[in-house]
Image (tube, rainbow, N blue to C red; front, side):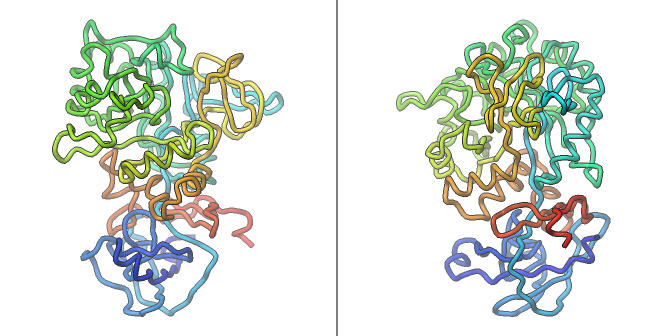
Length: 444
């Protein structure tokens, strides 16, 4: 099924919604070109933002449009008959910022023992993850490498190239390197023996550890480490997003890191100093008045019901909603059930929806997929459906500077989108206008 075969309709927003953003917040099948990235409502269906592109219909209640497919991009719509289905919602495809996690390699399940094991064939592991997350509405993702020895980075990174999505799986936007340049005190599940610093040779130490950075999109580091500002500037000069995390930095150190070019916070509240009224630490960046003019800070939230209390989710959301990026922080054990599994250089143990470093009570990542995180975030914060979906689509695209073609359904953007039912469960996933996954119930 191609995008050119799909007819969609949108619901006229309430007067309150129109006055707020010009986008409907009620459920129903919504226009794919509506306001912002979530594909949510509005009285137009062209470029998404007010003042761009033609209107498809002047109907005061509902209208339909047939979306054209131009080499996998959003390219047009045409006025057709009126209709008002009630079973689905359409929005831009989600991003998974910490997809299947990798250390020595991506995972290969050994189902007979409910255990995931490292494999030398990293490419096959990434491909398997990319294919499986289509069912969770993920159209692009950044696979994560946790703290590992240099020889592992040198071997693994070349095997995870940037790749477009399609029927084979979600697209790879680049690797997220989480460690080894992090705090020992806040290392979490990262193995202490492989932690490193760049105090001696700054960026040259980074290159010696990772090797070529061609496939890297995000690097998480602790800003309190010596010469971090030199490293941040060198990474951002190469177009790599620098994220602050696994850190004991105070607010001043965090602000200085942002002034040097850092733009993201890795899983807010987790693996950092707790908020204190005299020094809020990295958390204070959400409301800091010392950020460079025009600089926008984004922060990742693990909304799996385990890593972050619902009250903390609400605090962050209300303090800085436009910077919130939902991340899964998913470990290789996602989808494999209870048991022991491999995470980088060590074992983790899964019990229900919780993963711990084996033999400890140290959280080692999440088991919840992205669509579960979206639903939990919506329920916990009471935010609009639109904002919950933007946190998994538009915001990560903005973070990586890809908002003109990803995370939005404006003209010229990639035709990556997901169809949901009223409870926000995934019914179908499209990449470049092509159906790449469909729920069994949707085939009936």
